[in-house]
Image 1 (cartoon, rainbow, N blue to C red):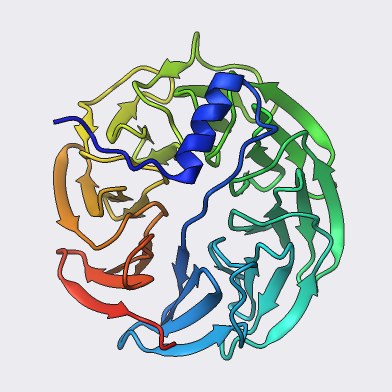
Image 2: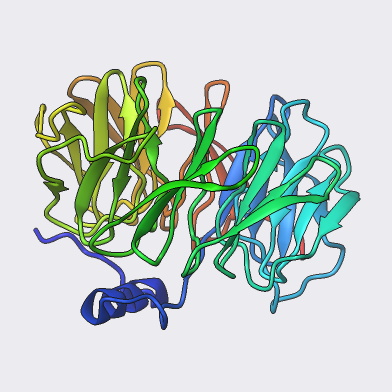
Length: 356
């Protein structure tokens, strides 16, 4: 049976990008993003950001008070290390710091001129916020601009950092390495097509990145030198970030194929896993297991090296699942509930449906 891939606006635009070879006319789609702390889940799902009690699935608060369909939220909310701030960007070009206790606004950062599609990275005592206005903004914990760096196209994915450098990819087919404190360019490499997912970091300074055309590259994080004789070619397009786990590199494509790669050589080192539906986001690790969401509405649990289980969930699972203890949280796209909690055995704990 052929894998069924729904033709969304994002997919059509992405095909246009491949045909044209540039990203100037690419229009993004978006889907809900979820994160969690010890007591609450936080989901950006359209008109609101919701805080939901992890035990009961009951809404604790929502932001803002009134819905605005013109300015939704889809970027995954992220907590600061001390848990005092929940950082989330909106389609209204504003990056917010919310109080996780009640959703009150601590501050607003309104320098961006376009939408926030991806979650910020919080590292090195800074908030790195990628914007569709082509800029990566480094923001202090009190909402001030520390620096900004301009790519030549929009940034749709979360940066990563090794402590001294910040790495990110953009629709301009380029991966950038910046000084984490000053925002100055250290190196950049131009790939064959747009980069939609985050890079992955290896334990010895490697940087792995996938292009939309299905090629996976490896670079030296210090100087940008290529580490493989040639990129690895997947069968399908890659929107998801590569993922380094248990000494191997995992990559998933829109055909629903999960590849296990030798991170040193860039060759397949394990059997392919076929999910049966497109995978658009990176997995969530749990002990020796990677949890993937699929467009067909399944949670795929890949336990290293080769044990596979799948559980069905409503809606299309485009985003990375969140993990809270032994509960998996998913934020389905086009489903009755914007947030569903299931156990590691696939049993549903609760579904959150907001009151009107």
